[in-house]
Length: 200
Image (cartoon, rainbow, N blue to C red; front, top):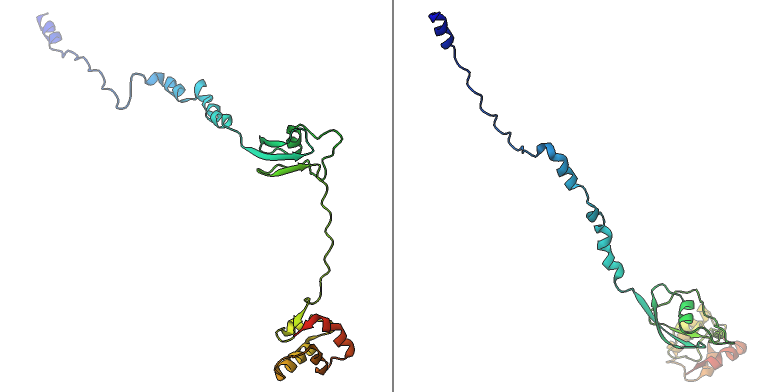
């Protein structure tokens, strides 16, 4: 019996295991990580931050145009309207067209331009008569005119213009218009056509 007790006491006693060391980077709140993911999601307040940031730009002063409305309106004067307004808006802002008057040639649908003057009821501008282009200057100096200018005279072409210049150079210039008769190719009829358009 004594030997059995001795054998039982000689068995090694189990040592308690130490607690496992914490894993690097882990935290006791690791199981609650869904909370941290929720904190990264947009909150109701942050979702409204976008429109809130753009609010001041919309609340700033509007871009405007200033025009002068005059003529047949009830309240002529300088008027300020939002950009993009049209002539009809400016006319209405000036009180509208007077009774019995018309807007005239105004294009009421045209957009306003800052600083312009709008005349209501002005008559349409008369069409300018087309100017008749004179083929030659009023008067050409025979002693200074170039061959190109001489070609603009009635009935004078490149060849005849060159003859006039050659005559001028060979005789020290023209002293009278009548000397044109001495140029080959200028007869009485042609001389009559150009004598009033040249001088010396």
